[in-house]
Amino acid sequence: MKRFVVASASPRRRELLLNAGYRFEVIPSDADETLPPEISASDAVNELAKRKARSVLKYETDAVVLGCDTVVALDGKILGKPKNYEEAEEMLRSLSGRTHEVYTGVCIADSEREESFVSCTKVEFYPLSDETVRTYINTNEPMDKAGAYGIQGLGSVLVRKLDGDYFTVMGLPVNECARSLARFGIEGRVSL
Image (tube, rainbow, N blue to C red; front, side, top):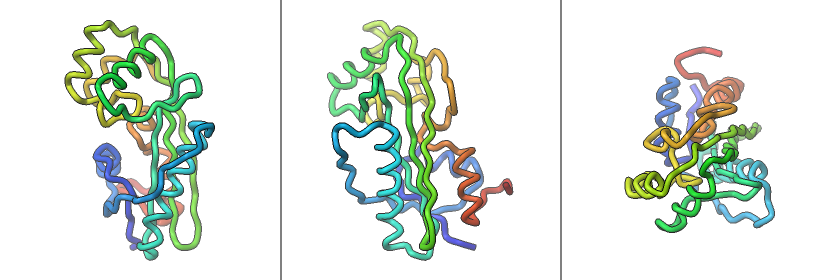
């Protein structure tokens, strides 16, 4: 059986893969994540997922490697992880009562080939009061999340509705990823 390596330290991705019955090793990528400022969100996650998979594959040539990247975009502008409380507050206020997109790029590669794809989900927030923004930021949950929220945690109460794949917003479109992994001979507990 082929080794399966995940080039991400994300606990959410690890949880999703474990829940889908996969066995894998985690070797976080050290890929350069610098991108040109004019790049689209879709192109950004696609490029970064490829870089992450390739950077680990250089050293793990006998493995199938999964690289991923997720961004939040509002009006075509990428919202990364907030650097501080003020930036988290600014992001959450900009998302309040509006619809934004979450893009997750996935690259699966071995020594012979690679496949990549991008999944996009639209997320609509409820209008957020000052108190809601303040109390949510004070939980510290927003501080390591793209767009300053985590849909799988306390941030779930901010979301009015989704159009697309919930798991894309968590950082790994499991359904599409499983089908791609199967083409590389990697399967979870359910054969596809």
